[in-house]
Image (cartoon, rainbow, N blue to C red):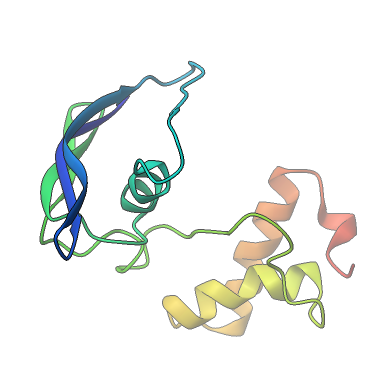
Length: 132
């Protein structure tokens, strides 16, 4: 379960999230609903590590994973994020796209990145698509 606790996010004088607390249960369908401009995207960006919160904390299965003022796991290279839509570099193969982030973020060798990328493709039975 992901617990978002007492999260505050402000842009200048505009407070978008004001002490938000929410639980997102593992295995359940979780929905964030609201009108345009109410903070849905801001909340998602905070959870995914794309932007910092001004106050609050995130817990995963009761373990603190992020507090305001700490670098996100996205910044430290522990997680990655792919935007919706066609985010791949079209001039690269599937394998090369999967190798890119580990090589840039973790500074690992080409051979290590290739082995890691192939293991991901294998996990999803997509090794035959590596050159697409």
